[in-house]
Amino acid sequence: MQEAGSGLLESAKRLLSTLTAIVSTRLELLANELHEERLRLTQMLFFALVALFCFGMGILLLTVFIVVLFWDDHRLAVLGGLSSFFFISGVLLAMLLRSKARAKPKLFSVSLGELTKDRAHLEADHE
Image (cartoon, rainbow, N blue to C red; front, side):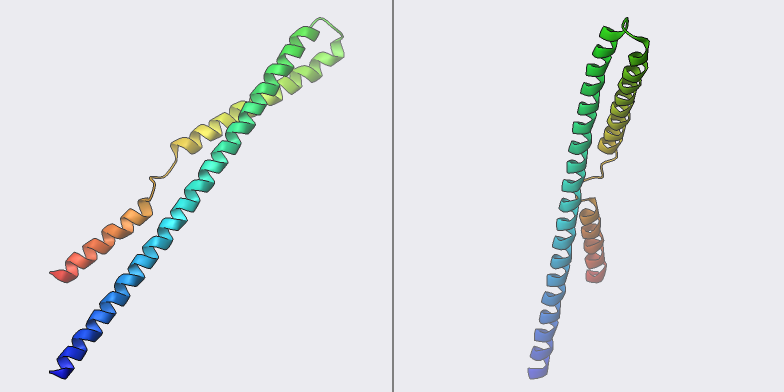
């Protein structure tokens, strides 16, 4: 009788150890996903700010370009080139920001997938 109780106790300890390891792994995975999402949002904010800066500079330089349009010929090329550079930079960064926003992964998708696998594995073992 002692051996059966000891075996049952060992089995319960192993089950508890396994469950603790699973929960630990899942919590680490969840923390990683939260960290990745925070980095993605920080990057999107940076790109948005740079795009807004470039659009602002483009508008400012375009205004100066229009004012100077009928002035000396040499300044026009420089102002037009700078205006074009900032507008093109703003458009490219805005497109990059939009693609980043559309390509965002489902939050906790990896964790949810792993939990689904765990549940399926436990149900298979239970049957």
